[in-house]
Length: 78
Image 1 (cartoon, rainbow, N blue to C red):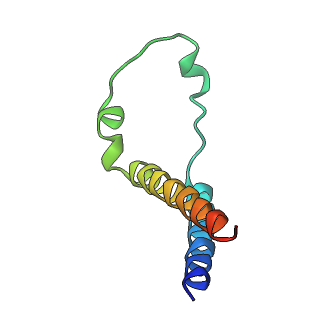
Image 2 (spheres, one colour):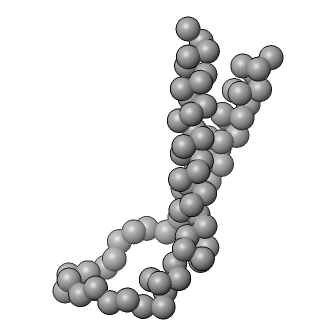
């Protein structure tokens, strides 16, 4: 019973992780990164509160949950 519940949660986490990763923007900085200048902008200072920052935090949480559930399910199958 518990293994079935963990498997369902694992599948839901996997689907949510896939969707959140697909929602994220690319990390290419374009030609502006060639000059090597490190300018602090309003966007770079407040990126954690933006939609992208929330997606990054959610991805981190779901990846940790994914690996913990995978380990628990693997140990449980021995």
